[in-house]
Length: 445
Image (cartoon, rainbow, N blue to C red; front, side, top):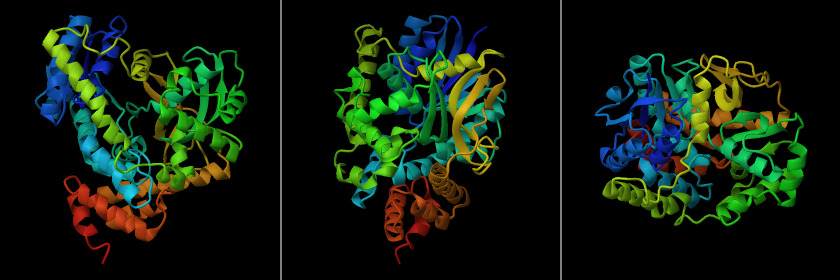
């Protein structure tokens, strides 16, 4: 007897590589049915048609269906995998471009762009979670949509459920890089980490012998010797790791997430950014077109061979998590955003913090972290307050709370800038946040 898997956001650029990964683990994770759903049916359609061919090639016993509604997609399933992007790439481009016009960081998950992306995604996220819990009460709901901190904060208001989880690949990617630089095998490092999603620090990095390699890695990062060969041709990654080295020079101690660059050096980031050529603009010109071509090739050839899809798949961290949920005593560690509940005693117990957790068939158990030093505590509390206020603002239709959330964010700060920026961004998001938009028109009076 196999499992039933629902993929919400089937029109994602990552759907086919994700299916590759899932189907390649058929011995330990046999799948009977895959249900795909996207509220943009036209966008999902070519992914679905290509997916049927891919799955037939890799896992002939598995059936793939295009669900007509969200309710049908999540009814009587074992796993709900959520990868939505409310507003699509067009709104991502707006999230990145508009803040830059006001001299603020323009990034899809950080700063004003990240806050607005989260704000317009809350309604969809709550609807998906509600449907999954009503129609498949015992299922795992695994959400890898961005921005995880904002969405997890919204969801925890309604469900305190160890089987509703948010996963992020950024810490996984950083660990892959660290292991490559240190000459270790993939998955060998056992991290200790605390913070919020895209806003945290590695405190220890233990290899399989139990030796902490953090200080050794710090020196390599500071020297600029921590960019793997496969990434040296990507200027974005090169500059990211260059700034990571600078962060370690400026602040002795833990290794920060690369996303902290947007909060440590916002003015520098803005000066080096081009509003007319944001990351979303590049993705639309390159990756999106490449995925469309791959789908077209698969459909035309009736096989994935020669389509350009490749063979590696993606989302291995998702498959690793799923495998951990299949066993009562697997007890594998993952870095996951969870309700604090005292794991970090000197932070708000209700805060959604990203920390090491143990995952098994029974759910997620967080590990005790201990108190964090004042510098990190101050940064975390400020960022959490910013995110919590915009969540409150959306759920309560309270524009004042949204504005306070923008003002608190380190990438914005100035009240007048926050007013103008929030007003402009809500005008672009009035389809998803109509009441807040109507109220925002009075902000600049």
